[in-house]
Image (cartoon, rainbow, N blue to C red; front, side):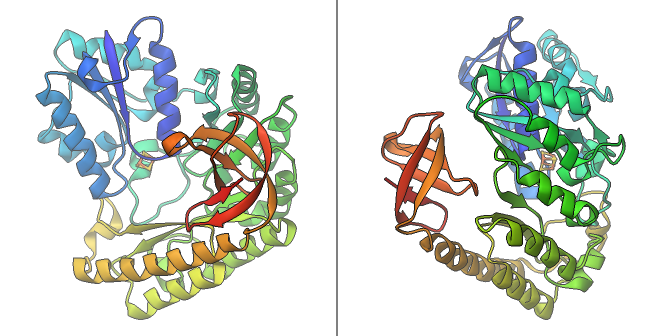
Amino acid sequence: MKVYFETFGCTSNQADTEIMKSLLEGGHNLVSSRSDSDVVVINSCAVIDRTERKVLKAAESARAEGKKVVLAGCLPRIDPGALTTFKPDSIVSPDSINLIARAVEGAAAGGFTAVSSQHVDKAVLSAGNGQLIRAIPIAEGCLGSCSYCGTRFARGRLRSFSMDSITAAVQRAVISGTREVQLTAQDTGIYGMDTGPRLPELLRQVCTVKGDFKVRVGMMNPTYVAPILGDLIQAFKCEHVYKFLHLPLQSGDNSVLVHMKRGYRVEDFMSIVAGFRKTFAGLTLATDVIIGYPTEDEAAFEKTLATVEALRPGVLNITRFSPRPMTDAAELKDLTDRVKKERSRRMSELKKRILLENNEKFLGQKVDVLVTEKGKNGTFLARTDGYKQVVLEFGMLGEMHRVEITDAKAHYLIGK
Ligand code: SF4
């Protein structure tokens, strides 16, 4: 069978796609364009309604081209109602990606196949595939009950994968040629709360793997970072670990955080960032904000602007609130599109200014970078120890270079 993958959503979903591809290799032919395929696997996301619409559009286009469609990922569980308008040939849930071959073969055979709830250790399934950047899942699910988020319906409660299987997966990746390992989960900060050893311990063990590689630690929610902060900062000192902290703020207003059921205050968030910055001067903070949550009034929004200004993140993901099925926030009166659009515009302007000001501080500096990707027009993309992206005209994939920063844009640096 000729199989084509289309992936939406987060790094966890990308990691799931890589695992599914490796499981199909040998038995099936993975193709690089939809038109060449018999079966299209759409690894879906439904975190916001705009993404869900894109997923459904991709599925409908594949169907219109006469392809069989396997719907993987989060959408079927976050918005099962959507499947009354688009009926996939097969469904495979995020916890059953080990059964992807059955889903693909079932789709091709006609009828309908659904496989779910196997709860596999995905780190065991993560094969080394020689890619320079490799996402390795460390856990599935979360412990939160955020009022706006449907991911917990898709990914369930926390299941941490074994520390040894993760370390072995990192080893396989590094031996196969990976130079950047992305440890990923819906919330990496809760790793081990169900099994014992927590994230700092995992990082220490991963850092014992021999080889030249860097580790990017994925998103962690502030609530569960606070109790392990000291130990986590110690673990981040390992030279393999990028000094990159992805900590979602969501709102700079404590009342809105309570309505969102986030479980921390702005002050708690600030102390975590201060703790990391005190130890790692070159830290890049990545954060996320939701604009236009139903209870966000003008004053609350102003507080989010002020908090972002004070935080000066290096990466800021701005999401406009959209109600998701079966969530508490979907019951609240939505703000108008005009208000949400206007607030997003103001936040985007602030973002652009802060990111550029941050990056301009690098002008003239000499920094060590790891080249991990090809860029546009023959360029190369590299990362500093703080995970800043540097665009280079010349570079060797997988190699470290010492470069001088000659220009700064809001989203990247230019080096020579
Ligand atoms: S976990 Fe969330 S962001 Fe990732 S694919 Fe699922 S809905 Fe999208």
